[in-house]
Image 1 (cartoon, rainbow, N blue to C red):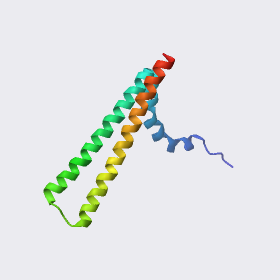
Image 2: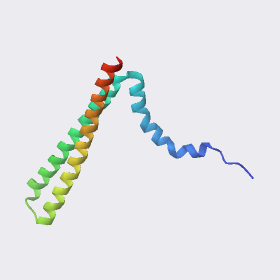
Image 3: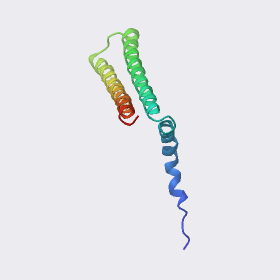
Length: 108
């Protein structure tokens, strides 16, 4: 019986490793300041996502006008979903910034 190589088990995990490499290197090379930079990036992505959602909603209202109630419900639900995700990104970003500041004060 031939034994299979263990490296084949690592191939599906390679994209996860490559995606996770950026924050780990950022934190490892820059320390607490890198954690704060990553938090600021998350906050900016959250704000951009919220602004895009509101822009898309407003564009739909302006170009198509007020449609039937089912169409308005779909648009409102899309806006709520995008805004919820943006708020989540903002909260995580602020938490990372606070964690880096507290860590810098406590350990620095």
